Image (tube, rainbow, N blue to C red; front, top):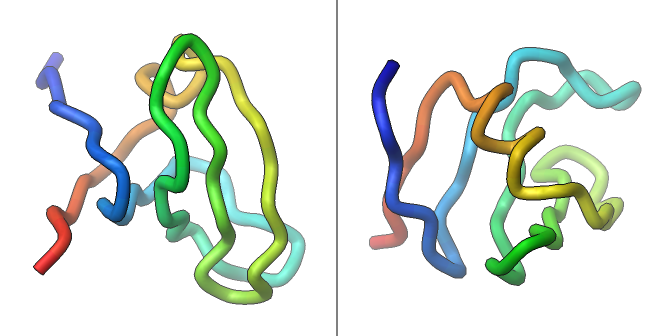
Length: 63
């Protein structure tokens, strides 16, 4: 299992897609919980770090 270093501004691809159809999320906050913004519809969610780490498929670093 690959370990990722998560930082604000990175884009993470998760296993399951959001109802809008996008699987990509921008990281807005890092800590015990992550705040993620859907790249498709801009919906924001708070999700525990453990779930993000478990469901991450890919991580794109900010430019």
